Length: 520
Image (cartoon, rainbow, N blue to C red; front, side):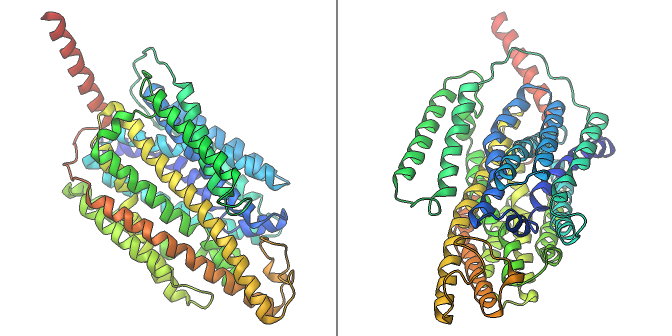
């Protein structure tokens, strides 16, 4: 395919990815307002974020496997359709329970977009040229990440619109993506063959992962870490996943082919993706709350404050992608990205309620540069080292573990944040001689800063500043472990044929082998 044909085919993919990114980022600056409006708790704040991540995490392997068996374009359009349904449900929500349910539906759709967009890219673009186009996706990611919080802040601050439009605004983009995919994406027809979908394996994987993720979300908040609920959820999760491994090892069409983990590159990039998810998503998802609660900024200003991190990600992912496509050398950028990400998280662990915006911007830019060099190129390394018939499975496994890392990080760090905020506020209120309940809300509630008297406001700002810094301090060792795993990835030359071309070659080789066997 020529560059023009590839860009035409990618237009719908980019629109779809923009929708998925917008879904996650547009609510970032609106969440404090949404939670206050629905009179929900700090744990609900975490659940609104976690619900989408959990659903996306649990379903990514299923979408990846389906892409190896069925029409990829139709699956992409189906995932976008689910996103539209989830967005409409979220926009019309009048209680936090329905909002969380709608985020689950959005997450299922986002899981399809996350897995399938990268699978389709690998199918039509050779790994040697993929870096350049991955840089374009990095730009779309950056634009969506910048525009999302900014648009969300403006919508919340506009009285005649409000936070519900944070969900409605993604619907026309999703419909546009469906139309663009229908018009521009042309993929060779998949040869019809008898397939058996491993429904039992899919159920066991989803149930096992959900049990463990629900545990890390609720433990330390709804019940103690050492409790019968912990024993029940972890025991059930482990048993279900062990059963899933047993089923996957014996079925003809496994959801996650266990054989791909014999590939050293796939195994190491998978572990790294998990750690990056914990460090990156777990640390940064609460930054908007820090901007608004600790620094006292409006939702619109909070959206602008994230620009340095996004610009760092945009520049590093685009430049690294172009250089990789030109030189074919990629490991050095993984190592450098992991080092820079670790440094960025370490610097952010020093922030508090009095940190200047200049210093904060520099720290966020460092983190963004590291993530931009690392995240997308992990997928490139794995896709380059697997047979074309396993592109969907390998890509979805990486996305699955990165999403699971993000869910675990958000859940665990969210519980830590809530507990640290509560203890710091109690300490501050006691020192100031203010009775409990003087913070303007109940236990674990997100306070409405506009209603607080000045002495209490300062205590709350300090509590959220200290607690947010702790999150980055905890995330830093995860980034350091990601660096250690990246070092052991073996660099291999990037292939110059696309996934579709390699699939045709593999099919031809298999046919020749069959003829030889029959002839002998």
